[in-house]
Image (cartoon, rainbow over all chains, first blue to last red):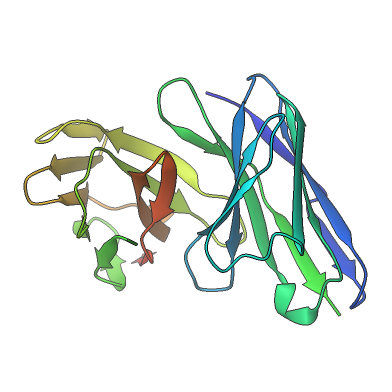
Length: 114
Length: 108
C-alpha cells in the first residue's frame, strides 16, 4: 500500500495567522489527493480534492479562498489555512487513492488556533 | 449522500460479537471499512467491490448487498484491540464519503 506522511503532526497558532500543512506520498505518484477535516467525535468530512497541476475541487460549503490547496507535484499536496480562527481548530487528514481503489490516509495534523 | 451507520455506539465484553451496519440511499459500487483509534488517522480494514461480496480477515469480516445498498461489518470474539471508531465509506464520483461512525468499546 501507499505510504503517506503529513507535516506537521500538530500545530498551535494565533488567530489571524496562516498555517500550511504538507501531505506527501512517499512511494506512490498521486495525481489526486484528498483533504478531510474531522472535529472531535465526528466523522471525516471531505473538504476538497487536490488535482496535480490544476485547481482543486472544493466540496460545498468549503471556502476555497480560506483553504488554499496546491498540488504542484505527484508526491506533494499542501493545504494552507489562511487567517485561521478558533473554529478552524480540527484534525486535518489527507489521503490518496492507491492502485487497488484503496484510500491511504496520512497520520493527520492537529490544528489548534488560539 | 452520507451513508448511515448503526448502531452509533456499542460496548462489548472481550470475546463477544458485534455487527455494524452501513446503508446508503444511493446506489453503491463499493464499500470501504476503516477503524480509527483516538487521535490517529483511519486504518484501512477492507474494501468490498461487488454486490454480494463477502470478505474477511481473521475475526473481522464484512458483507456487501448491492441490491439493498447495505454493508455489514462483523467482529467475532472481540479483542481489546478492536476498540475504536469504525467508519464505512462509499465512493461517489471518485470521492470517498464516510458514515458518521460507530464507536466500539471492548471491555475486559
